[in-house]
Image 1 (cartoon, one colour):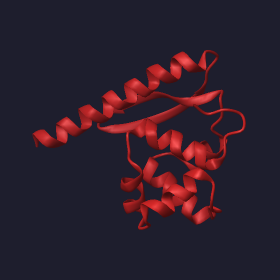
Image 2 (spheres, rainbow, N blue to C red; image 1 turned 180 degrees about the vertical axis):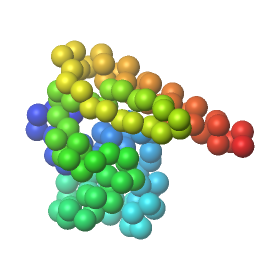
Image 3 (cartoon, helix red, strand yellow; image 1 turned 45 degrees about the horizontal axis):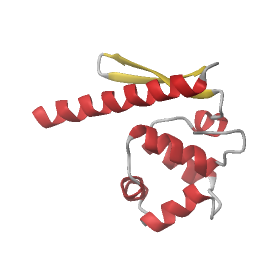
Image 4 (spheres, one colour; image 1 turned 180 degrees about the horizontal axis):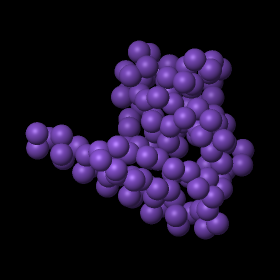
Length: 120
């Protein structure tokens, strides 16, 4: 869970896990080793803005939303509109319950997407 002291690495990890991605998948997409990517999440290396843009693209989130993610914001809504997915950020008062539900909905959506791809 994201807290008020969350680092950019914590935020990246939170969104990666929300998306259901493994570290090795993200590392491959970025063209770096899993160990190198792990250092980013653990805050053991500085993350230049260009790398942050790449990570944000892989995670399908804007750099601004990723950086501003805090305990009062979480991925909450997924809209499937003509095969386009819109991820929205909204203020939440009961963050823990809503994040749990949001995470389940996100994972359900990703699984449904994978099933559709496998059926093709």
